[in-house]
Length: 252
Image 1 (cartoon, rainbow, N blue to C red):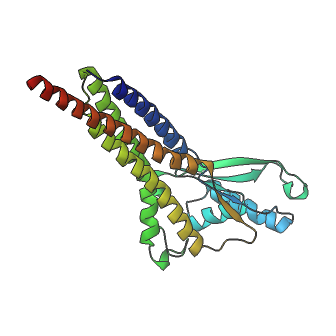
Image 2 (image 1 turned 180 degrees about the horizontal axis):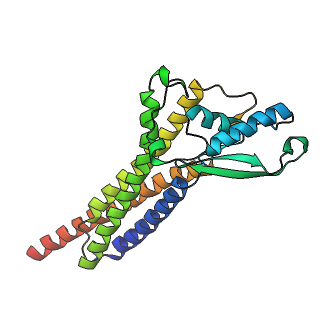
């Protein structure tokens, strides 16, 4: 028999878990983790250079320096699986005071995600930067681990509901705690990787970088998972203590 307080805690924990998983899933699939704002181009030679950079970004082979330069100079946005730049619609856009721009995105392939990062981006002879390489791989894998833990917890919770038992709630709470830590670690790895990238790259003048809304969604998912974990652990412990007292009372 489940007490009303425990049932309420389980329902709230389930809602928090679903919200956190939705937030994390949306953030993983969006390209708005980091955004660059660059000044407008008014000279034709610079426009020609940017057009060549745009073609290399969208259709050329993957190269970290080319990708970074395009993001820096073309109002780019970066996510875990996507990279985007703003491209002009008109061929003579640099002559217009307010040219129309569209966002074009390219996804990272799985092989590109595991491509080594170098101490000097684009220079394969500079040696692999192991810290940046592993930070990038961790920020890819950790959110998948987090979502996998939540799915496993949901399956266990469904089985527990069918059996009418609160016993697995403690383990499910621990799974949610680990999921929250993985979400938080994803954000930390991404921020650390971006900081290291900016240290080894030369940013053009008047280019600003800001955090995107996708990163904040992933950051919000972490405490939601942890709150769900706290409610599940409390419900399991409280129900266990109540059951123990009832058993002692009956024996006495």
